[in-house]
Length: 130
Image (cartoon, helix red, strand yellow):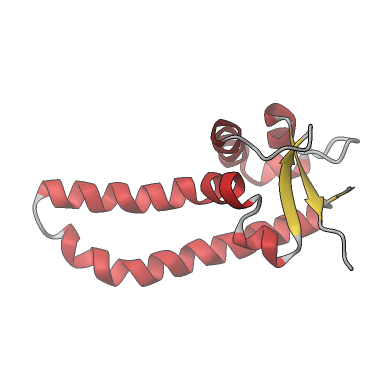
């Protein structure tokens, strides 16, 4: 299995950012009128949008092995033992990546893993081309 380079992984991250922007852009006209309703509804709508943002990557990585950006570039995420990530691993990976931001991608080790890969025992691979 070939590990993905930093460049292709950052490109995938940009695609994911665009994807989230589009999701929010589509949902905002639906959500905006609800934000002017009662505090309870406003809280639920706000929580829903935050969940979309914060659970997008863990959900996609856990259940599909890749985000939309990863799929676009032929990448997939696996545990170092070759299995799919657990939801806890995927969430921790996303939290660590979010905490360190782009600095996380500057921490490529000789193994080809970033700091968020290292702490969650995960790795991003390129799919074999046929």
